[in-house]
Length: 159
Image 1 (cartoon, rainbow, N blue to C red):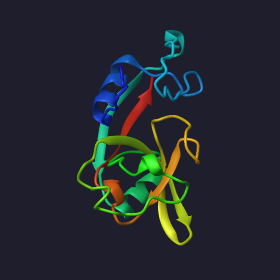
Image 2: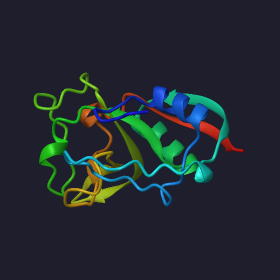
Image 3: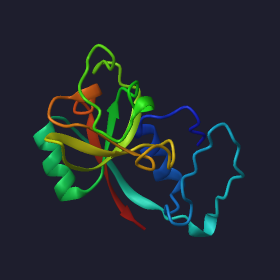
């Protein structure tokens, strides 16, 4: 599955259900940054899984509880402000980062507080770039850039 220009999570889950996955240790993500990398796919390291339910939910408190209980969540957001990320949490600004223009899927991996700003810790899919090596913080609790509108996780069992 080519994913050079982004992808929403349901098609990715469906594809990996059919084709399987390698662990990140075996096949780490590399930021292409315009470069082409040789495919390092190794079928002997692929794990198949059963079950592909994708559960949807939204809202800051619900997301926080589910993240704590089940682990990382797939979320959609508007990526307009990520390009200028400087290490401090991205703040809500509907004029420059509409919460209705959701076009980027990322992985929500944690939450915290920095300078009294509650934030989500997000792993981007652009590789280990930027001040937080591929992660960024975005304000939590007010749907900054639409991050609290569509969240979910897949239920899987490794075969």
